[in-house]
Length: 553
Image (tube, rainbow, N blue to C red):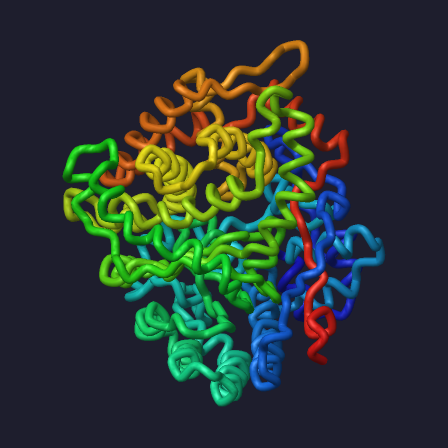
């Protein structure tokens, strides 16, 4: 963007950004529709204070949490630079309108994440698809034609050299000073760890951050189970890269384990091989065996930073993303119980009051919401990670579409797992209808994240597919939705088969066609979502967080 380069050369920050008058205007193309600018809307987020019971922790553990929060704050700075640019602090200071300033902080830039990345400030233009990972004047064709060994990797920036040619700059070079500071903090925290394994993991993660070699620390993390404190830190998800889906964004979570809830969850991992075998697809689409070393635990999250803190908040985690680690060892699934409870109380239950049939409203429960979210994360392990014809990983084959289809698969297979485990008598006395009605209510919540996000596209795809197959009906008089339980199970099975097949085939064109035809909000649904807005139901949550909230300053 023109205004980014100007900011680095001038102190006239406010004029360059707000008035966009720092460069001559080009003649308008009358065939191009003007870019829609929306109003800032910080009120769509409900405040929630992140706390946890630290009374059983030692002084060393509390001090360690403080160091991890310090490291996370550096991750936050790096994500700002990846999503917006190095000049973000000066830009924030230039914003005089309080609502715009607050909304910019929530979105890490001037584009509304939950409204298709539309700008909410005049003069900033459309958000670059490649964020700040690539030159804004670079085309896909130029990138694909360039000889740049490692260009498809997750941990490098693409920039231009003095002759204007594309070049790679590894993250550990571009952000060397900041990453050294994070590594030093992790090594200090490691000295305070009561778990030797966790201390060694933090040392390995420190080394990974300053080398961009993450597989060893990812693999070691799979064996770190005896720690009450945990941290997820580094460049992890690739959602910010809407150009290719290659580049990973920096983020961090600081976590405190809930021992009671974790004990309740631990047994479900053992069912993965049987569930994989039962998937409704031919054998070649389920030949891989899910890793059995997977971990399933509940945590209270005490700090979010970077990509994890931008706009819609994650309430469950399934990592590592490295396919080799997943196939060898599985993944760890971390349920963020306090954040999950906040979303349920402040958003999901109020949505059910407006949109769910009164006779089915009693089936909406936190336990079902927790289980549906948990099994979504577990379901990421099902299916296959490599295409069936040997053309590489599913992620490589589906490029920018891979995240949307993977999230859609995890959603529908999570419900599939719930159904199969309930039939086997493994979910206690909970009514299966609770899971189905709560699942449908959760779809309305997630759809409000908009089509621009991987989760939003996945939820709209599923909503339209389920509607086409009669999984629910909408009462025209009340505007409320009623689940047809038998048809919902059939629709769930059919959509599972479709998504697993598209992934296994690496069918990029098929995925694009599916998203374009069904990953959209139709007028009737938009009207119902507008009713939620009129009822002042938040779209998501935002956090008051830090050392003071935890009482460890």
